[in-house]
Image 1 (cartoon, rainbow, N blue to C red):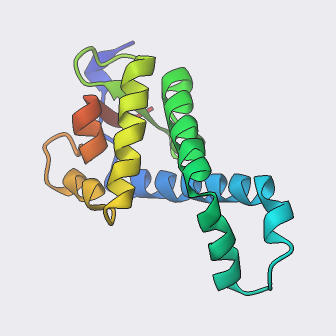
Image 2 (image 1 turned 90 degrees about the vertical axis):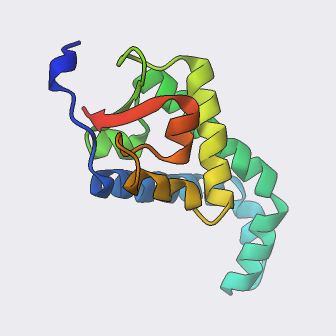
Amino acid sequence: MNNNNLELASIRSRAFAFVIDDFLVTVISIIIYWDKISVVNNDVASVLLVMNEFVWQILFLKFLYQALFVWYYGATVGKIITKIKVIDYNTLGRVSIFTAMVRSIFRIVSEMFFYVGFIFAFFTEGKQTFHDKIGRTLVVNA
């Protein structure tokens, strides 16, 4: 890997990757729980009530999705589409499974607290979010 050509991913590409990933996890969640969702009234509030019953399962799905894709591929589907990847801050190489899991957990924490952890990217030198700081990762162009 040629580390001289590393360039931090833009906030825009990271935001687009986030939208793609969240949409994908939402679609997967709807498919998994379709039998429960399809029997409720056709209004958004009813669907949200059903989805809230499975909040822990959906959080676990998000954790697995983020951790496994970042560890195995260095990127989630959204990051692959936007041509960015996650690397280890210290080695500038592939992240370990432990690092990917820590990053994934704190990404969920950032989401749970009104996405405040994502705002860190605007104010840190390496455009690191809270979960990047804790996980000791960088997001760079692939």
